Length: 99
Image (cartoon, rainbow, N blue to C red; front, side, top):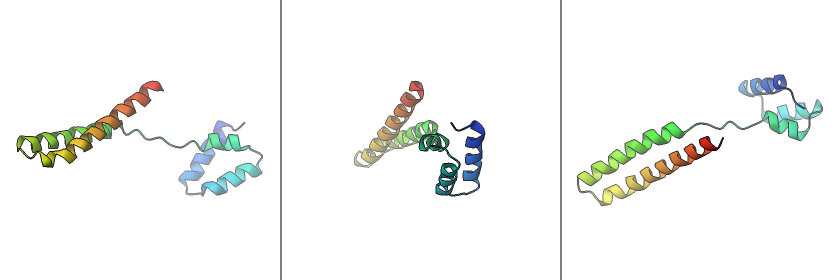
C-alpha cells in the first residue's frame, strides 16, 4: 500500500521534471506493486466546462451575426462548431453531476 506522503513525493518529482519511467522503476525497486504505482500516477483531468460555455456563446453570436447579414452558407460552419461546443459543455456537466 502506497502512502499519501509517497504519492506527494512522486508528484513533486514529476513537477521537477524527473521522467516517469525512472520514478516507476524506483518505486518497483522499493517493493511497490504495479497497482500501487498506478495509484500514484493518476492522470490529471482538467475542467474545461467554462471554456466550452464561453466559446459556445461566442460562436453562437457569430452564427447569429452571419444569419442577420443573410449569409446562410457562411453560418453553417459556425453553427456546427457552436453545436459541438454546446454538446461538449453538456457532456462536461453530465460527468460532473455523476461524480
